[in-house]
Image 1: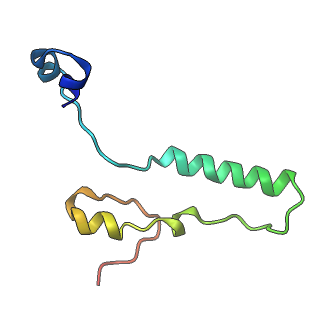
Image 2: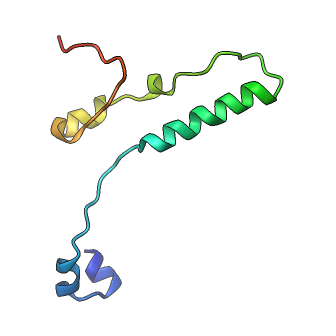
Length: 81
């Protein structure tokens, strides 16, 4: 589909196959934590505790589609029940 849309030859597309997926890179979470820390330190705000951005992630919808495709690295993940 990408080859067709871009006009690239099928041979070239097969030589360099593309993988697509949905992911949330750890660096994005780290940036959010850095931003929150900066805001707490440098701006008058009522919030003084760091938010836990991991609490806002819900792997449920992705796992309903394909459990094997979902990988989470949680620091204190509870053991499976």
